[in-house]
Length: 384
Ligand SMILES: *Cc1c(COP(=O)(O)O)cnc(C)c1O
Image (tube, rainbow, N blue to C red):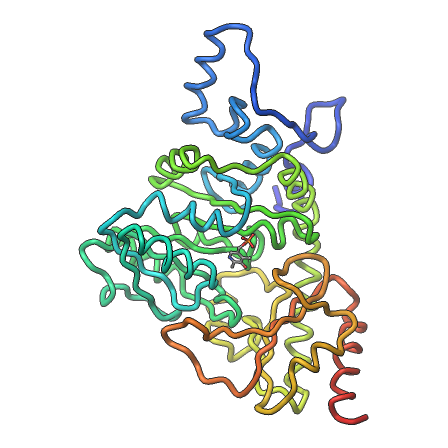
């Protein structure tokens, strides 16, 4: 069955019944017999769809987890209240005092903070690798356990060769966790490219409407058992209202990403013609770092692009004049956004940039209106 069809059918109830699984709110789950209670507690250790106690999620979260596991090609999916909680939840089960972690230098800044401030404090050592690493041999130590990657890179979208990196990692008996928020289970599937764990901030495209927070870790193979145990032990779960919002978002994930992708690419192709622009960062542009790998491994791009302006251009003034692009954290909702971006802050291998960088998220508006809004702001800057 095609993925578009699956999106319309995930969680479908027995008929006659509602088209959407209802919001199931529960802490305690009641039983009539001690035997039933005991059987449920035993079953949940291997079956994530067992309704046993609210901390293990109710039916609404279970339906969402099953859908995401299927979309990402995983065996199991565990849900968290935010994307950052999912990042922590994907790393912590496999790392203890004395272990060594490798992280791609172009990682999402909050992931870097977790590694630097929390994992290090607990005795994990952390080193950073360049985004174009395919052979991990120079970085691996006897105590190295896991490689945390993100592709395309945060804010600058360099595309990693995940199949090559995973082959090297597995040759050294290392696990690979990938932050797949960019692809969100639709454009890119790290587990199929060789990764062991895929992390998605569902806050972005899966919720898709700027009104829900969610994180997911999808896994396959030997990592599932420790992940299931640690998620339960640390009390991580997703409430039914957020799970419902994300299931509802899933119905239009493919359609929305098609429009976000078209709009993002159209803007990425429009900006380079503006004389104030030095460079546009977008994985769909020929010449972008990793573009050929992106064409090989992904089915499209999302609504993100980062524009590097020439030195001296008042980029913040340019953003302030926009009417259709609002200023705010996050992305992946229906709305267009523009944000000052400092991708090199904290990076070990910074690049030199021409001038100010602005990260745009192309929303679901008509492309003609978005271009007109940007053109009007350029016109003002040009004194027209
Ligand atoms: C937003 C984001 C996260 C964190 O998600 P929250 O829900 O905001 O905690 C993690 N990784 C990436 C790549 C993100 O863009």
